[in-house]
Length: 172
Image (cartoon, rainbow, N blue to C red; front, side):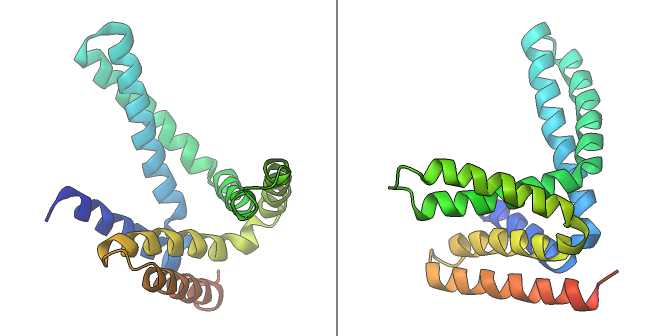
């Protein structure tokens, strides 16, 4: 088993977790992602400015802690941004040959971001299920031999199942 397959399996697990238990794991997962991003930024800056690996590691841990805190407590803004980006990006790529597509995509991004942030508590289960379905579908696309229709169908089923479970079974 090569490293690509291992990473795709991890992506599939994260997608399934988000789809079926997004309310429970979203804040924790964002904190972990923020910690990793912060650590890499801190390490890179520490190495760039000092050239000393010990200082770079210390800077990495400090920035990782800060990144984890930021991502954990700004989770609602991050989810609304992802939702707006998905809507704006979908419009842009649907009409990519049109001259107005970029401007309309930005307008849709801003409107969807504002609405999603306002209704975030009601939408969090559906949005995490959508993101989980996209991640799981992408992982399955590569794991199952690049069969686009099968991966799309399974991603859609994961999204619908996760949205139903989070909306009706796990509703707080």
